[in-house]
Image (cartoon, rainbow, N blue to C red; front, top):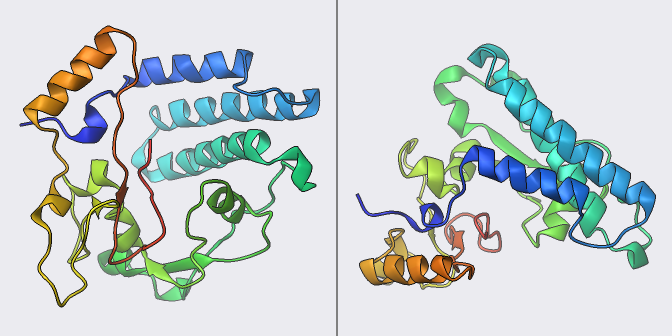
Length: 224
């Protein structure tokens, strides 16, 4: 099977964590000592939580994954929140709300709706701002969000939610034909050869971003 774009220049988990540990030692931007401590400790705890999740059962794994993701978000906020903005780099609360939590059932889990909630210093709202993503002012389903992630939804689609499309290419609005290129997430042979040549000389491999015009018109969730 041809490689997908997000698989062309992927590091192994071990290589990824090694790169992250290097960032802890040498942050990618100058910052005060207080921010540097927050950045390094958050990344360290994120790694600990993610690695712990791999060693426990599925019943409890989600908790470690959640806290690992939360710590990674704190690290990102500490380094991306502009000092001139006057905002604290620290975030408080997750910033998301489940609509009608009591109605959630296993068989309809992916129909569960969530939306953004809270102040702008919550984790989700701050990261949405820093990453130029949608803050989810309107409710969306878990299924729609799942299908925004090509690396999982292409192999494990759920329900009838629309799949990931090119953010840069035209999409159907329901009245015009769909551009067939919008559904191509595989690299061509020429693109693979170009990627190999660039890696051989130490150059980065550009990868396009994915979006879903039918669900999140402003949210590029896959933009390496």
